Length: 217
Image (cartoon, rainbow, N blue to C red):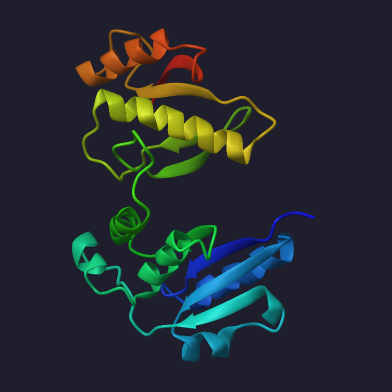
């Protein structure tokens, strides 16, 4: 039997919440096995919209009226207190009450709150946003998608490591290949940071990941 996975959910994050969040959980529950949801938010409002198709044994409501707004700055969102739905959801992972946290809310605040509670992976300096992009042969994972304005050579190398690890966890039967998105496929193109990162990754070829060079974009 597979291990029960507990997902902490910030039900108050994002537009049209908590309705769209609960609808998403209901859809996910129909296609998932061994999943339990810890839902953080205004219980009075959430209880009114929970569909009958979402079994009560699959979720737990943790009540709080405080929430991080989309208009809050990352710092002000984190300073709203430890009783916001976002903070409590992240904290449940810290306390090992949940395995993962999901929020459609304020991305900047989520990064700050997660960093305060969960810290960073050892030797990783910056977090990164990732996304799934379709390609001719399947799916690519692209990062960073906006979390960082400036990145060092080390940051870009770290992103290759994190992206490769994420790809392998989502597609365990495939071997990840890493590449740098650049203004051209020639080695001489790009900023000094990009060119130096290319050299570093190329020197480490086949050690940590399969580096394929530049992808033009």
